[in-house]
Image (cartoon, rainbow, N blue to C red; front, side):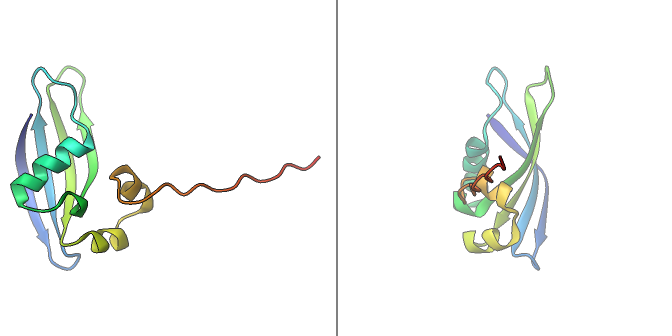
Length: 105
């Protein structure tokens, strides 16, 4: 897999770098979030826990995946700014399980 950085924007207010990328994977399956996080971590010298992959879009028949990721200064900052379902997808939080309601008879 080859990772190309299309656009990089530094957001100092949110303490993060916003990255648009294109992953080219000829002859391979679509990369998962962990593979993308490893590639971004090596490119930006950041720990994997600080990276949140927000979106990945792969079109049928093409060997590329477009995506958007946010690289935070620390994992604690990421946990305060990101929504819970994105933290669960990226492995930074556990899914909240709600107790089911009792049915009336």
